[in-house]
Image (tube, rainbow, N blue to C red):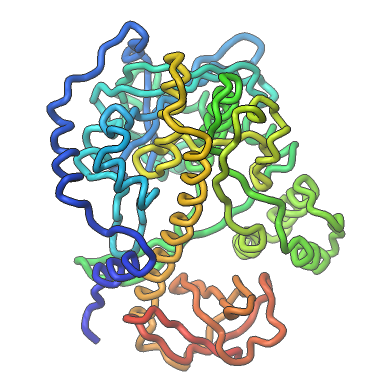
Length: 489
């Protein structure tokens, strides 16, 4: 069978879903012109280059959005600073680059490669917080108490310098005592102490959220594996301690930015996850393990059940996590009006999975448009200026970002399924253990583990529901049309 052209499949999928796979010449030229722009100077921009800033990301990440540094305080408290790349300084609101970003609203991560939201001259160069490069940033400063509460926070602009670009796998293995320290720990003074303090404060933040019902799930995503440019497998991309560490810091920073804009009287964008519509199915899954959940959605009760299952069945916890995440549904964006934004719990814009009320997306402006919008709101609030967006504009942006995020997810799944179909083309008739991941009028879907992918059950799906396990036989594949069809065995 000829090698699959995933790139072409991805481009066609994006066009079909209303996403732009390429930048207009004007946008590319505008991005290139940003090289000539003089760096902004102002007494309001603090110089924090002397601090031991560092980043942790994937091995191959080039669009670095955030750095962090921490300082131990008396009584077990920690001063935590998260610096977010000042992308707005290189992307003019209303310009050609901004227009592309506002249309797609997100970078699209496919098995064929990344379709970035911003031209790479920006996202992987001029606005990326590269090691050894001075960069403008928006800093979220928080005081985290020993019990994990954020007692104070502020937001301001600063110049920063990344001292060390670390990777999730190496940091996690070292923290777990399974590998030697990353080499940067020997060359950067104080970096080892920083990592250990970060690990501790992340645990405190996580523990506080979990007491409020934040869901501690462990979902796996598929990662394409290539050898000599040829796709050979789809393997699970596992969570680890360092990924959790960064996630905990970002959740705290996103909450602090939402509160800051509320306190300044700004309308803003919020990220929310409503209580699950299919709570009844989650109750049924728990009952299968002898656990009775309340009849109405209850995040703390659900997290207690999940934590018990993690201990009782570590090997099966990823499948249970996936089933619960599918039943929780997708997050969305909404505009929080200025009048209601000041009420910490009065907006109704909570996030069920994170157990937080006011929550913005602000820490990834290189790859998510809501974060860039939030950054512009923050910079206006810091400067005492009027909001750069009207409440009506924010409502339109929220709706469009939710729509395009869903379209991007569909593109990513389609290309992944095309890759999986190509990998499975010689295995027709083979039987697999599977987990049901979707059951609706549009069809019943299952995930198999090797390679890790989803397909549709076209025969024998009656009675299957999300979270069930089943044996399925591979009936047919079509890589060009992204079809993987199973029957119940």
